[in-house]
Length: 250
Ligand SMILES: [Cu+2]
Image (cartoon, rainbow, N blue to C red; front, side, top):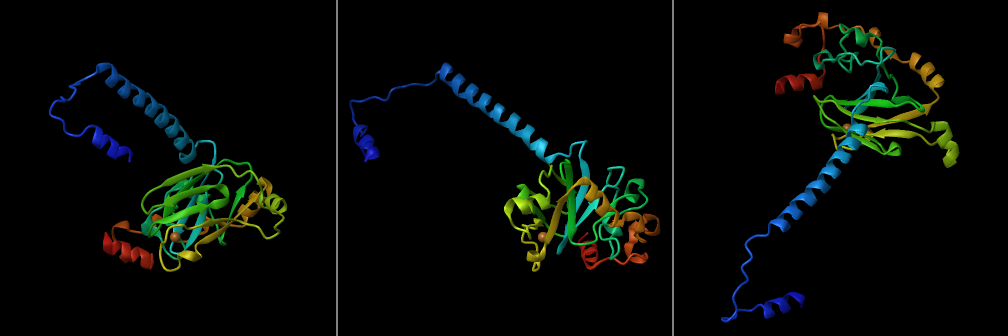
């Protein structure tokens, strides 16, 4: 109704001339400068927030969460708080992450053995996410955290868990409550099985648990010197099905 009113009001009329209004510098200045200021504020503050969340700060505990079809493995950086080097050509049944023990920083790294990841409460945690085969998603719904796991690329997320699992169970009055890590990318036919328990506990409990997990230096094949990387097929490393597939693609 409104528009047809305009159509009627401005219908063709021989005696009426259009108003010629070619430019107005003041108006143009206003509609350029105002959006420029608004967008600058939005982008600068947004980028700062983005960097705070996604970039690893120097202070936190560095760890890696690794996704593959169809599970997760967590790696802790050990005393040096540095994740050692890894190479997909070193991946085999024993060395699922392709850790390279030639790198000193790898030796004290610790790999989770069960389908469980533990985090010390009140500690800033710098996650690095990686994937072995296809896109996976690291989704930790209770922490409001989610990040893509991309093959051949590092992605990051930082947060500090503030409530232990035991405290949360009491709070919710649910004795069987557990934090979880889920995959939220449809990554294959067993995608739905990609689930890892997250236990948030006191730093003392965490340290005791960490001692029970596997040290990278215990992995017999995590030694790049034994592998002629140019030709993985001729070495004593048995490539996994995924690795073979990747070599074919490459
Ligand atoms: Cu997945």
